[in-house]
Image (tube, rainbow, N blue to C red; front, side, top):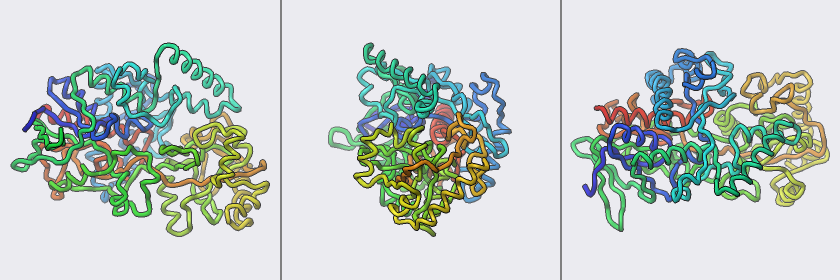
Length: 549
C-alpha cells in the first residue's frame, strides 16, 4: 500500500461524514474520498432532512412515538417485502432502533439538529403513522465558517437564505401575513449577512456544512477529485482501494474496512435503460458524480444487487430559464386551484401524494395513456395566490413562458384544451367534475386532501387545504415530467451494513450505505428524509461495527 488508514470511505454524502466522525470519536484514522471537486453528495443537494422515528426531539416536544409504533407503520406500508431483500423486517427493525442512536451521537458531537415542527409522514393515515412527523433537520448554517472549504461544499437547491419552514411560509406571502412576515425576516437576514460577511444556508447544505465542519475539526482526511478505481481484495476480504494520484495508481489500505457511499446511478443512462426503462438522465437533480461505477465495482467482487428498478422520483418542470437544477414541483401541484391530467385530458391520481408515488403513478399511466409529460392545469386564482416554478410569476416571466411554448393558456378551459391538443369536451368534463368535488369538500375519485399530509402540502390557511376550484380565467397549463433526486437500489447489505453475496454470505471488510445500496425503505417513501436518514444511520452502524469487531 502507498498509505494506510483504519477506515476508508468512498463518497462524501451524509453517511460518509457520519461514519468518519464516529471513527474519529474512537481515535481511528479515516479518509473520505470524493471523486468530484465538491463535497456533500446527494445529501448536500437535497432537503437535508432525516426520517428518524422515536427521536430525542419528539420526546423533547412531547410527541408520542416508539419503536413499536414505527414498526407498525413500516409493516403496514411495506408488508413482508419478500421481493425487496433490502427492506426485510430484520433490517427495518435495526433501522428503527439505530436511527435515534445515530442522532444522539451527532448531537453529542456538536451537530445542531432539531425536528421539523410539523411535517406529517407521507402516509400518516396508515397504522402507526405520525401526523406531527418524525423528521429531523439541521439548523441553518453560516457556511462562511468553513473558510476555504466553503467553496468545496456542494450547494443545495435553495438560493434564499431561509429555512425550509420559512420557505413554506413565503410560498403564501401573496395572501398570508405569516408569509409576508417570513419574507421580510429572510430579507433582513440576507442584508445583515451581506454586511457582516456571512452566508446562511439551509436544507442539505446546512446539514452537510455542519457535518463537514465537525469532520475537519475531528481530523478526518477529506479529499476531493479522488475517485476510486478499484476495490482491493485479499483472501476474500476487502483491504483497500485504488485511486489515481499524480498520474499513477495509488493504493490506500483499510485496516478495518471500506465503506461505499458513492451515490446511485441516476447520471448513467446505460444503467437507467437497463433497470429504469423510460427514464432519462435529463430529468434528474442528482449530482454529476452519481454514475454508479462503485455499485458495478462491488458487483465485480461478488456483491449482490437489489431494488435496481427503484428511484426517488420527484416531479419536475424544465422552464426556459432553468440552468441544470430542475424546479421540483411537489408543493406546487398540491396547492388549491390546480390538477394534473394526462395527454388525453383525464385526471389520474391524487396530486398531493408523495413525490415517489407521484412519479410511479405517472410512469405507470404512460404505459396505457400518454402521460409524459402530464399537464398541470391551473387558473388565475392560483397565480394570484402562489409561487410557480421556483419563483414569483411576474408578467415578464409569464409572457416569456408563453412565447417560448413552455406555458399554454386559454380564455376558457375549451381554448386551453385546444392549445394542448386535447379534446375540449374531455378537459371541460375533467375540470367540471373536479370543481364539483371542491364544492362538496371531498375528492370522490382520489381522496385528495383527506389526510394531514395532503393538507400540509397544500395551503393550511384555507378550509380545504389542498382543494380549490379551477374557474377563474385565463387558464394555464405547464408540462410536468417524472424526474428524480436519485436511484434507490444497489448493493444488498445486512443489519450491520455489511455487503452481501448472492448466497447471503458477508463480503468481509466491505460496507455500504446511501443510494449505493438497496434501500431499507424498499419501494416506498414513508416520510421526509427516508433516504438521507438511512444514509446517516447505516454509515453510523457500519462504523460502529467495523471499529469494534
